[in-house]
Image 1 (cartoon, rainbow, N blue to C red):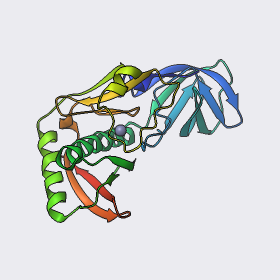
Image 2: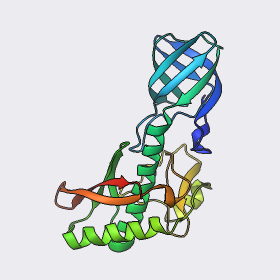
Image 3: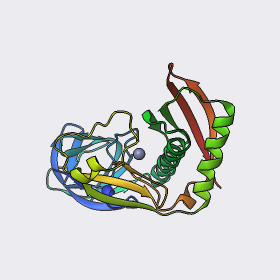
Length: 236
Ligand SMILES: [Zn+2]
């Protein structure tokens, strides 16, 4: 079982861990700051270093309660203590876009009551699909204005955990279909203070001031009641 350090500290760039198991070019560690992918957020890349050697982490993947590292280069042996280093520029860019999507989702929900049907995050852009029929130019303009208003308020972005019962009684999902697995007893919530809170397993910036300015770069019709918004960020 891998301890998921990023759930509590999204800003962890380096960490020490022990190799728990090795299988051809993949290893699993007892703890990880690398995000293993999921919820539209891609997995992290970076390096593992240990005395006398290092390997490139190309991808990380979750398998049950373990996170596996796909390596390029030599593989450390079981029990080896390693130092993990994330490609921080890429991860931070992904965090900015992930947080931007939450602001976008909150804005679309507040303005039009629309829920999310899918999405994807990249280091240089992100997109979200909404259950929405009308996405006129005026509406896109209103969404962009509202999102940038919230970003400009320098709101804190907080991580908290709630019980499954509290989650089910609350309004903490913006997904059209709620896919919470039955074994989950504690739900992680990302809260943009005073604006929006959503169940989420990804990594986020600590304050909306780190997002920059949001621009809607593209809209797409993905079906009768499905609209896609693509966004990009400028440095502010
Ligand atoms: Zn999210």
